[in-house]
Image (tube, helix red, strand yellow):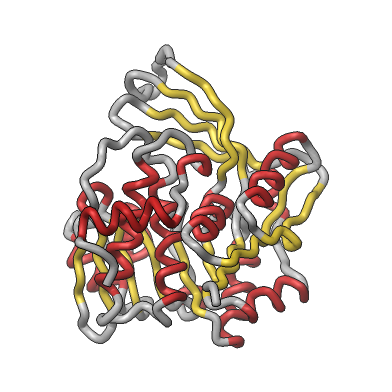
Length: 311
């Protein structure tokens, strides 16, 4: 039986321009290329989970505009159940993304319809209860995130929270999280400890949640839990083209691996992190957001080539 992942989150249309370098404040930079790509952290992670092998449901909102139609069609094409995707009056969410020739990016998001997802319904609760993993981010209103997490805790569904965009989090939400996934900047904001030492970030974060996965970009990822386990995995070496959706590929694949292995523990952490790192690196080899998210076969191949095969 396939892992079942429910994602409650955002769907945006990404407006992406590439340029030799990212603009500084007040600077205009002449770009090379422009494209529109379905995105949003929630939708990206749903597509990532589906391509990594999960049965996936998506709960979110799009506008009654052409962008909304594109976003819905993209999710359907990935095989995702979109019965929880609302269509509301007004514009869909958009993300303005600049990517430089070193594959670094800067992003500004206008939430649009995503901001209307303030409450969930009984059908959403049923979907969460039937899932192995509930995957959450912070691009939709906190009320919906907390509501879904509470239902998951009540029904025994594992809660994975990708705390992005970075913001301090209330203890009421952190108490419902099984696995927190953060990069170094997000970790510092959540922990309230401004340090560039991953070990210090992990030590603080496991006082707030039972398990933490810290993404380290090209350096890989690290895991910590309250039992004292500490695991660090290097990332595959690839020629990066665009890192925009690499974190979403990582998180979606991690949710699938966690579900398939029955949880994230000291015993499974190395294998889970290797799989997720391979997904993130495979994504970075291609341009775009959802269009770059890798299929399971690509993740398996890169994982085997880098680490010597699945464990």
